[in-house]
Length: 194
Image 1: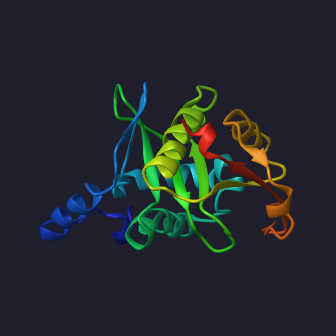
Image 2 (image 1 turned 45 degrees about the horizontal axis):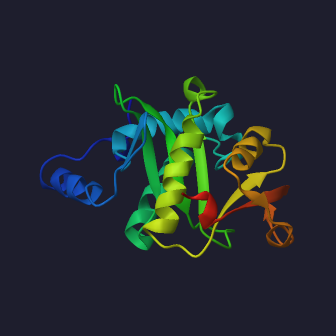
């Protein structure tokens, strides 16, 4: 049974939700469309956050925790003018993951974060989507800096940050503690965002 808060709005509030989602820039790559998150995307995110994908992304213990993460990722648009995009397959609209520009407790700078589903892994989906978001962050949003905060044991995320051309920032790491684990900070530059 779907919890009340997970149900789509109806009537006038549904129209308002659609209007607000239309304010989020749509990004398009060769294979992907990155669009505003919709309430129906929550199931996919919850599955990721409560499975092996979520170990290093939000540390959610239950669906309510996952909902809180979803609200934070989407609410940032309203509060800061940036947030999460739902990454979809251009061919069929399937949700493949999420990429976001975040500013959450513990962050010292704008964060480029990413999570993809198990079936999207190994297809360069996170790479392609993250490149598009990073370029948008620097060239359209004109953000002064962008980092990725990565748990030290998260080798897949480390490999992605390095593939994106980001470099470790030891000075930024010095005062970072991420849920009791060492945090690696990767710095993205405008030069990489072309």
